[in-house]
Every structure is written in C-alpha cells, then in structure tokens.
Length: 245
Image (cartoon, rainbow, N blue to C red; front, side, top):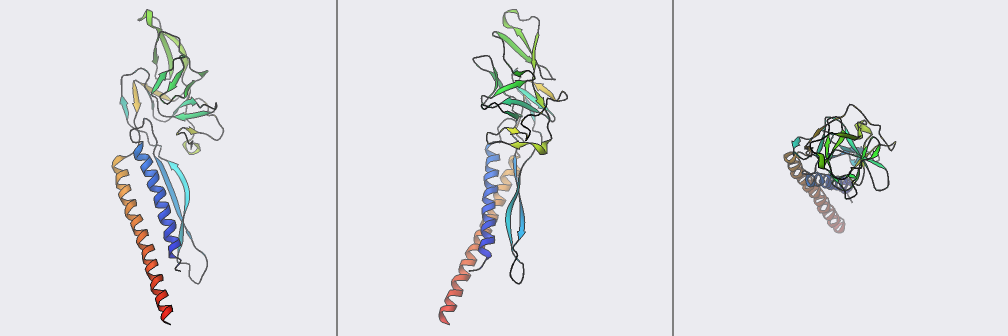
C-alpha cells in the first residue's frame, strides 16, 4: 500500500486539531480577558528507502497570543481592567494561584471578593474580604478602599491592594480551567502594573481572521481527503493489474 496515506493521515489529524483550537477561540470571542490559543506544527522527514521524499506532521508547541484586548468602559465599580501587561492573581479551589485578565469581580455572600466564575481574588495580604455595608473603589495601582454605606459620602478606608503580577509571558502555562500559572507556583507582585476601574478588557480573538482560518483549514482537510482517496484508487488499480498477471 502506498505510504502516502500515512503522511496524508497525519496532515488531516493535525488540521482537525487546529480546527478544534480555532473553534475554541471563536467560542470565547466574547469572554472577558480571553487570550487566543495558537497551535504550532513542524514537518519531520521520513527516513528510509532510496529517496526521502515524504514528511510527517508532528506537534511542536501549543502557544498563546498575549496581544492585549480592547478596554471597554462599563461604569461598574467592581469591573477592573489591567492596563498594558500584567495579571490579576486568584486562588483556585485547591489553594494554588492562577492568573487571569478577567477583572469582572463580585462580592460573595460571605464578603469575599471573587471573580465572576467564583475564584477568590487575592490581595497582597491574601484573600480580599470586604466589610459589610460598604461601597468599594479600586484605584489605578490596585488599592482597594471602602466607604461605609451609612456614611456616604465619608472617609475612605484603604483595605488591601490587588496582587497584580507580571511574569514573563513565555513562562506562563494555560491550565485546564482557563487560568494561567507559572512553573514556580507563585509569581511575585509587581507594583508597576496599573489597572483601570469601571472597565473590562475584551477578548483578543480576531473574529474575521478566525473565520477565514476556519475556511482555509476546511479546504486543507478536503485536500488531504482527496490524497487519501487517490491513494485508495491507485491501490485498487494496482491490485487489478496484479490479478491479471
């Protein structure tokens, strides 16, 4: 059987992998602070035989597009967007740290500052807990202040400062929960990271580019299927000739 089926098969398989990644990006085009995923592949020559004319496709790396998304004003006091590079620190259910650009926060019934998906937001002093009946404001450096609702307007009391980090992007690993992490487990706070209050960062997924990429991948997949079909036809014809002889 012609070995072209194996090279065409690997090509088709990795095109399906790219389609899955592209579909995942499109599904998160409206997700706050989402960073688009990228796939990288490489061709590896097949050694052996008289002439090395074929190559397999293998996974190289799975990366992330760290291009910042657009900052959109919401006017909500618990919406915060990182300006430039940097990340919010949150605590996972298992106690480990994760990093996100999604600054859509809320206060739980126990007064704990959380992300929209329920992870605990970390300050430089640990999990951030809000006093009852308070109005919250977050400054550009991440400082969280509160004003007693019964005394509004009144004196502002600094409570904590968001733990804002800025690890090297090449060291960040995307977890299965969508949060990023670093190999060391924890990244130090960076006082140079700034935030914008009353705003959120949109996803950095390029909708038009992703749709064009989806069409291109579909055409590439059809090409691989055509190669497999031609190989099957050639094998069938060869079998007929062998039977005649």
